[in-house]
Every structure is written in C-alpha cells, then in structure tokens.
Amino acid sequence: RAKAGGRHRFELFDEKLHDQALALLETESDLRRGANRQEFIPYFQPIVRLIDGSVVGYEALMRWNHPDKGILPPGAFLHVAEASGMMEMLDWQVFEHAMRVIPHLLEPDQYINLNFSARHFRSPIIDERFVQLINKCGIQPRQVRIEVTEGALLENSEQIGAVFRRLHEIGIEIALDDFGTGYSSLSYLHRFNMHTLKIDRSFICDLEANEERSSTDVVRAIMALSTSQRMEVVAEGIETQGQRDALIALGCELGQGYFFARPQSLEALIAGR
Ligand code: C2E
Ligand code: MG
Ligand code: MG
Ligand code: MG
Image (cartoon, rainbow, N blue to C red; front, side, top):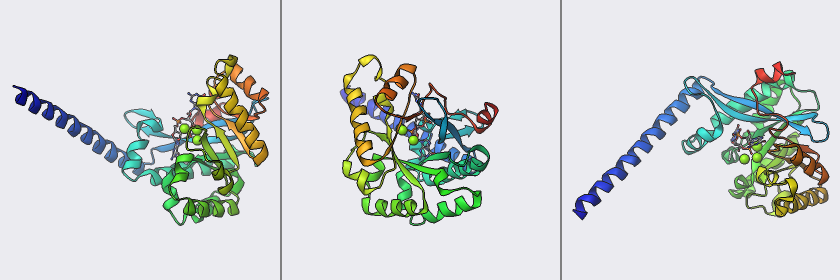
C-alpha cells in the first residue's frame, strides 16, 4: 500500500512538472510569435520634481500587448524571456520604440530611462548599437538613460566597467535601480560612475507617520551618500501625499509613483497633455 501510494505521488509530481514544462514551452513560443509581431511596447511613467510635479523625464516600462490576454506587465513573462534567452531581443524592441518617440514626446532637456537586463553586458557592441539608434532617431545621448539593478553588476565587473565607461563617453548616464535592496557595495558607486540612485519602493511605502523609523533612517543615509558623491536621487513608488512630503523634508527632489501618475501608453500620455 505504501508502495502504491508512493508511486502515485511520483506520478502526480511528474504530471505537475510535465504541465509546468508545457506551460513554459507555450509561453516561450508565444513570446517568439509576439516578438515577431512587435507586441512588446513601452509604457511611460513620469519622473517628477516632488515640489511641483513638473516632469523631468519618463521611465519606459515594458508591456506585452497580447492579442488574447490584453496588456501584460513584465512580471507575467520576463522570467520566461530571461530563461529562454530572449531578453535582449525584447529589450531592444522596447528601447527602439521608446527612443523613436523622444523627438515627439520630450522637451530637449527631458530624458527617457530604459531598464537594462544583465544580459546586455555580454554584448561587445552595445555602445555602437546605442549610437546607431540615437543617430537614427535624431536625439541627444543625454535624452537616454539606463537603469540597472545591483544584481546585474555582480556578474562580470571588469566587462561592465568597460561598457559603462563607453556609454559614459557617449553621454549616456547610468542609474542604479532598486537601490538598497541588493548587495549594495559602496565601491560600485565609484567604480561604475553612477549618475543616479533610485531608492527602492520598499523604503518609501512605510515612510509616513514615523511608522517605521528604520526606513526614514535608510532614506536619510542615502541622501547623505548622494550629496557626498554628487549623485542624483529618485524615489520610487510614491503613492501618497504624506510620502511625498516626508521625502521633501528629507531633501529628496525627484520621484515617481502612482501619486503622480501610473505608467501609461503613449496614446494615453499624448491624450492627457
Ligand atoms: P522597476 O524598474 O523597479 O520599475 C518600477 C516598477 O514599479 C514598475 O513595475 C512600475 O509600474 C511600478 N510602480 C511605479 N510606481 C508605483 C507605485 O506608486 N506603486 C507601486 N506599487 N508600483 C509602482 P512594472 O512596470 O511591472 O515593472 C517591473 C519590473 O520589470 C521593473 O522594475 C524592471 O525591473 C522590469 N522591467 C520593466 N521594463 C523592462 C524592460 O524594458 N526591460 C527589462 N530588462 N526589464 C524591465
Ligand atoms: Mg526601473
Ligand atoms: Mg525600481
Ligand atoms: Mg524593481
């Protein structure tokens, strides 16, 4: 009996694995189909001055405009795209789309932030690709910025340092995304010549009403660090007036979040102006 039960469990387990593998394959082939049809598009979330809400730039956030499932966020498909080696292809689809709209959407002093997967650092021609796209779109290099997470910096720091240096020479600035959640080593900030720190949403959400003193302390420490290193700071995920006010009191000047605007399609953005 025990034996039979054991075998039964194994069968169930196998079946579950089988289903998961099938689902993964389905998503993967669906991703390929979607990529061929240019279904991966940027949504745009404004980055604003906290004091008056004026827009300094936008973060481009990938969405899958799926024919059956509607608009899908990265959480629904990025892990499959990473695992199946499609990340670079999807990213460039979104980057190109976002860069093409810059002349139509942006003032000359505004910029668009692009989220950069660790995979790109394996490409030796990434800077040339940016130069080509920048020329093709007729924009200034400083109108494009790149966001990376700390995790991406761990992989191969020699190579990454070289890539960043080349991008910096072109005039493309780098922002460290989700700052404070990763393996924050202060030496990264120096070595990689970071222009901006983006304070992770997890520190912003309990800033209000002195609920969580430690978050206030973290933000204060990041502000001090940024001042001494002359880096810009952007607070992520601001959802309330109270969080905005707390950040202003701590000396933070820039931010983004649902309190100001959700990520929206190009059409919605243009219609709303
Ligand atoms: P991220 O770069 O840290 O982007 C911020 C995320 O927070 C976005 O989620 C945004 O929609 C969300 N957000 C903004 N304001 C608020 C707020 O007030 N409250 C809350 N709860 N959330 C807010 P999204 O668009 O789902 O993107 C998730 C992650 O996917 C991004 O995190 C980024 O790591 C990755 N990603 C997005 N677009 C791309 C892309 O084009 N390429 C690559 N490689 N990764 C991307
Ligand atoms: Mg980001
Ligand atoms: Mg972030
Ligand atoms: Mg994030």
